Image (cartoon, rainbow, N blue to C red):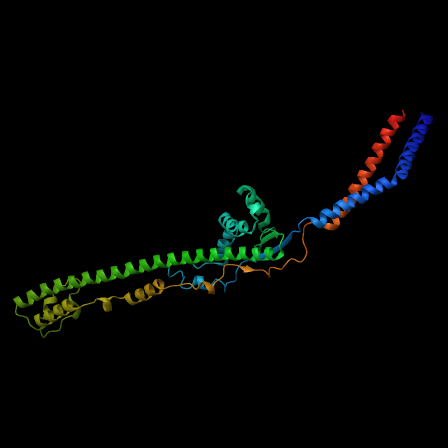
Amino acid sequence: MHVDSKEENSLGDFEFQRFVNAILRQKFIVLGFTVLGAVVAASYAFVVTPIYEARAFVIPPTQNDIANFNYGRTTEAELVPYSVKDVYDIYTRRLQAESLRRDFFYRVYVPSLSGDERKSPQDVLYANFSQVLRVVSPLREGSDRYLVVVQTSNPEQAKSWAAEFISEAGELAKNEMIRNLSVESEVRARNLEQQINSARENSRKAREDSIVKLGEALRIAEAIGLERPPAITVNQAVIAGGESGQLTYMRGSKALKAEIENLQARTSDDPFIGNLRELQEEYSFFKGLKIDAAAVSVYRQDGDVELPDNPIKPNKALIIVLGIISGFILGMAFVMLRGFFVTKLED
């Protein structure tokens, strides 16, 4: 067994030496394949269209950015103020919305393609667009920073598309916020208008009721010939009507007639309605409430969108190294196969 092991080792060493000698004898073939691999890889690396990447980061707005959204929104007004998170959530939903991607695809991406490229099926074009523009959600839990990545063959185009996409999402979110506020303000104004109308209607009916009551008291005063209040000490609340209003006639017919005529001639009950002026002021505020779009923001851009200087694809150095390795391996494989067939023919 020991002798057989030595013979096997000797045989293995012999075969390895044969392999090395074969490679050395045909080293120029291996070198040629290696050079060819390097040339092919270099040709591909320098001919293929480079791809540039632009990145844009967005973060939540500040409290000052959303201050005008909360103008007039108080718990007393039955309108809960918006928080930074409320506003930013609307923006991030718009940023990731399929509707915005589709609009950007048809309005910006497709017109940038050549005539031949546009002939491809829409599904293929949209799949390519999905690789060109991506929205990356926060990678860490608790983070609120979103990333928009654009990869195109034109660095200027990549930069402008990234900036344009996050800006359009901001405009859509801002418009949605303003529409929501406008609707809420209109609803609040209608509620206040209803309260004002109800207060006026109640005051009108109360005035009519007073005229009826005073009319009955007048008829009693005239029936008993009481023109003026009697010269006795009487509780004025009782004479004015008190709870029952039974002694109102004691004010005398002249006073009752004058009050009835005054009530009938009254053109407006507004000055006599307790909280009417506050309701009218609040109604005017919400009726005329307008949000200045330029004074609010639903997001912040974390830094500028930098113009990419170097392409991310292709990695020329890596491609050339892989080409050299591939050429070397192909050269070795060719030499081995050639040696195998030569051995077969000799046998």
